[in-house]
Picture 1: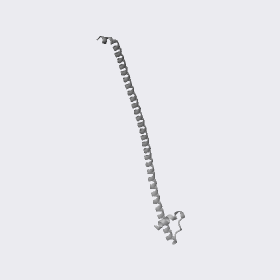
Picture 2 (picture 1 turned 120 degrees about the vertical axis):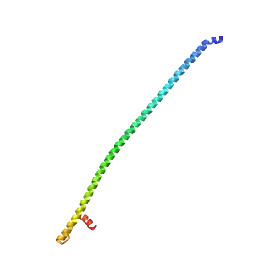
Picture 3 (picture 1 turned 90 degrees about the vertical axis):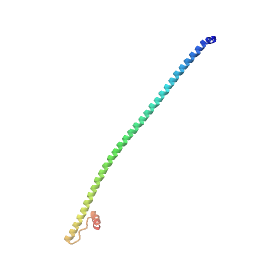
Picture 4 (picture 1 turned 135 degrees about the horizontal axis):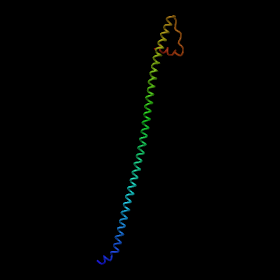
Length: 136
């Protein structure tokens, strides 16, 4: 047992050094884990910020697309109403033209009966219209 007591100064230095090295290793390991956790948190924060930026970008694009679609629908509705109005005007002009041509035919027949000779030829501007309707 004397040899154990004689080794006490050496053993206490060895155990003290082992304790210091173990403590230093534990501190190093804790700092390393904390650094890794901080790096992961920073990466996660960067990822979240990136996803938020992309989401905001897509949201803005979607809002712009909706606004463009609304404008397009409004323009289409305006054009449809204009086309309907023009079609109605065209139908009205066709009715007026048909009525005018019929009236001219009646006048030509009346002139032919009254004067017992053929009616004068129509002007060139309406000759085709009168010829087409009389042939039908």
